Length: 102
Image 1 (cartoon, rainbow, N blue to C red):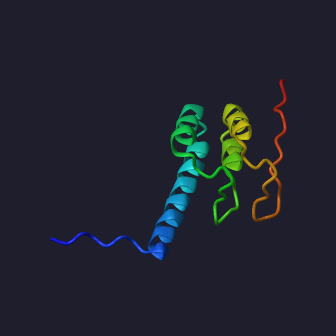
Image 2 (cartoon, helix red, strand yellow):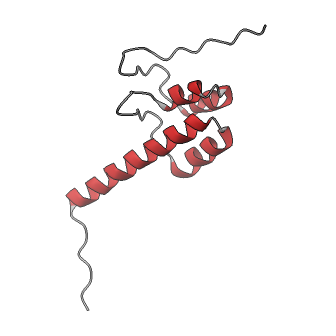
Image 3 (spheres, helix red, strand yellow):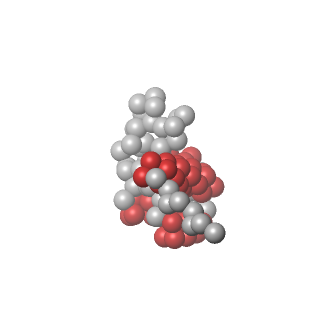
């Protein structure tokens, strides 16, 4: 019985990249849901890339949380170091305005 060959450096790098992409997309999905508890658990347990941007739109986790109107998720992501001034592909910066209290 022979031992399995260790993955090459290129294979390991490719797997790391795939894991990075998977973690980034999962974070975007959770931020889109706007459920802070789920985002918080995932960030704390998996340490996903908070700077990840959707390759089609350029949206970051903050963009998705803003679209979900989840202020608590936005606050949490900012506290954890999310990139607050990331532009999406149409070159619009994320700007958060308070809702009218009327």
